[in-house]
Length: 144
Ligand SMILES: [Zn+2]
Image (cartoon, rainbow, N blue to C red):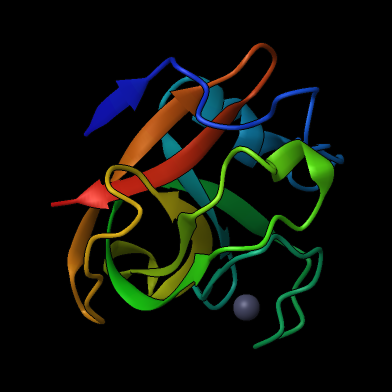
């Protein structure tokens, strides 16, 4: 696992996370270069994104558990057209849907760092990269 401090995107501000009370622990942990995932205290089911109620057993009790930022590519897409003006200099880039085996196979989105034109393979192992910005940290991914 590595960390990056350079910004690959976000000219003019760009999109940024806005943690609510529910997902604040996730963002706080990323700021410490740790990945935490919500887990039901009653049935032990993992879930992401964060929810107040367990979709499996309807318990409101949960914890945040640290897991290694290691996953596999479940799906991906290469973005050629910026979704908003702030991303106009960021394209092309690769968005991954990464499955986290250590967290029950929950899936989360992130960008693939490195060559945006390189081949991406479903099932490819990836490792988390903590990308620090001025007031938040993003979890991106690199080939393992
Ligand atoms: Zn549950």
